[in-house]
Amino acid sequence: MITDRPGDPAPESRTPADAAPGPDRVDVDLWQLRVDHLAEDDLDPSELDAEERARLAAPLRVADRLRYGIGHVALRRLLAPRLGVAPAEIAYRREACPGCGGPHGRPAVDGPPGAPHFSLSHSGDVVLIGIAARPVGVDVESFPQATTVREVTSVLHPAEQAEIAGAGHAPEAFARVWCRKEAYLKGIGIGVARSLDKDYLGERDPSALPGGWDVRCVPTADGHAAAVAVEGSMGRVRTSWLPPAFVTAASAGGPF
Image 1: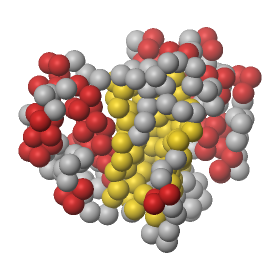
Image 2: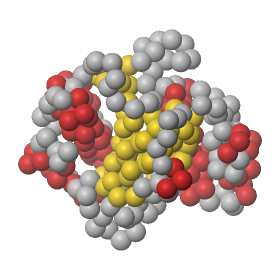
Image 3: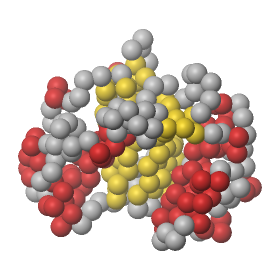
Image 4: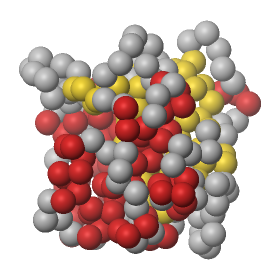
């Protein structure tokens, strides 16, 4: 675990003691990687499945391919020891969409009951992965341009709009609200197909948050915001930064 850029958070951070595990609390493990510490030639895609390799071969921008590849290689290497299989042996499926029932809901491990839940996000210079015993969603976003803030804020929940306006439409304030919302929507498995003004995910009024879920902001790199949402009440949130070597050929199998 490394943090070798000024402004990065400590290698590992934990929630306060008042969030200690309890019968109704769910611990969450989070890992982050710096995209700007790697090049495409550094990445080892040999453990990816055919669909993932096809995505990497698509005519995407280099930065998009790199973020995608890093995230999916890292996810397999983090899940493998928990499942007792090699990274390349992991298969995924889609759960039913909670909105329409179609097979395009939250991604899940196609394996035995009790497999861990996971979520993956990438933006700017950061990849963020979350793993928990219950449904979980994570999101990381680089700070947007001021024009994006004003254009998109108008489609959010009225109370979220008020929070962002109260912060002078600062990109950081918008990104924090947006990450919390997207983490929740990914957690429930519907994503931004759900109306963005339906749920309140701001920080000022915890009593107005969607029932049955806990949402928190996550420390991350400068110029980015991040959040995690979990079904139930959040216990300890363990946040670690992985070294670039975690997704290269030399580190196959990972340090876990």
